[in-house]
Length: 198
Image: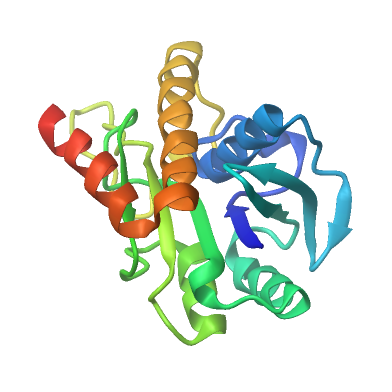
């Protein structure tokens, strides 16, 4: 079994915010698998599914972003899985909206959900899909400083949601490739695609 976790904040007021890109991605996978995340376990809303011939557990932590690691650890322990069986999808301010990058390790880069997971697991070496949500510009043209809390927790506009929808489709394909052929193949394909767009 593999554990596929999307990061976000529970509650309708957060549903369409950039910070919930991870939830959106897992919802997209759930839709493809024709399942609903309706089972509460490991401090998360979850659903069992089959994807690319693998049994997977889809999960959206209900702990709020800053405590995501508690849920991830609880699920890994309950399922008796190792960190190599985990993939986490989350928003990344450092990348423009509509892009993504895969990585097997890395620092939190200011992301409190990532910081929580690495802290609880005791390692930064876990697979992640970083979904670009772009750094917004202030009225005077300056970029929002790292964190961008107001931006991250403000619902996206229609055009932004359309762009997000496109990158969520790519994120799903990246997860499928990870399941089918492993992390190296997934990173080789999807990181190269991103490089070629820049």
